[in-house]
Image 1 (tube, each protein chain N blue to C red):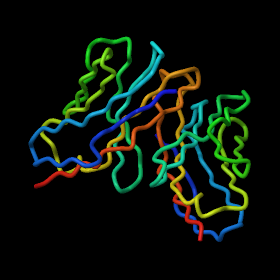
Image 2: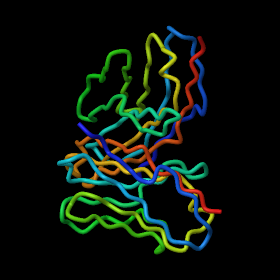
Image 3: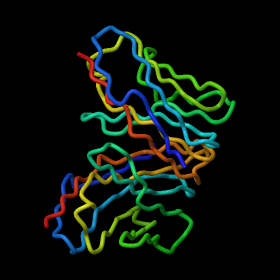
Length: 114
Length: 115
């Protein structure tokens, strides 16, 4: 069975600084997708970025980028120029198989200090 | 366009009562997922609908949980004889298709509290 591990329950970053959130996963599948979702106190789960496993190039979305190491089964999220609005729970998620249901890590709570 | 909507936003019920939670997916999305988010278990997959195919119920925790999707659109998650351990946030998500390539878009969730 696939698993997703986020080893940092909480992280803190100074506004305008850079922070990296860690995620590792375990799978025997060769074709899959990885996601980072953000969940603010409003509960709305918002997609931050996604990575296709067959692509070697790391995905980037504005201030958000990933470091995808397929052999190491690692998928970290880097947030540059952190903003107060980035404060939220961040979930790493895996999607594989025919249905595509997501398997989530436990989440990392990110605080941004002004 | 309109996103995924869920109702009610919050629900308080007494142990032993039945509850129904509703999800309206994004128009045109054929795949619909239910997840449960609780403090102890994190985010768990519950059930998956794809078009008119039989749903994948592999994530439902007990036979007290059931779900249906009418007309390939709106879905209702029903919990019978609620227990305190059912207290959680129930999230619904939809995507264009049930393949792993399709991004899931989430609703705001229903927070269920069983007293």
